[in-house]
Image (tube, rainbow, N blue to C red):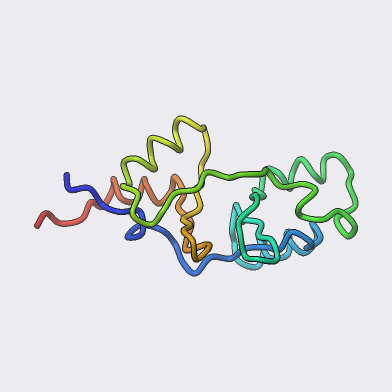
Length: 131
């Protein structure tokens, strides 16, 4: 099978949240866009972390105040990051090794896309036609 760069599989545009967004705002964005995971960016547009739907469940289970807690206080720092040129197979290996379901696609210009295990499964289910 021909190696495919992750840029051909990643989803874009990317919905991200700002580090100073409240957890209520994060939840609203995730609900409105039906996302299970969002990157958390700083003022310079760099990805610092990520928040998942599971994180939101744990947040609410602890009875935290969604209006006052900020995204930076709850996100997982340093999500798996790959470049647009990284091969899909390499991304899949890294996701498996790190036991994560998402990766951000970044370069010097910032955030370009995201890829999830669902995207990888879709590729397996519907491989590209051979050249």
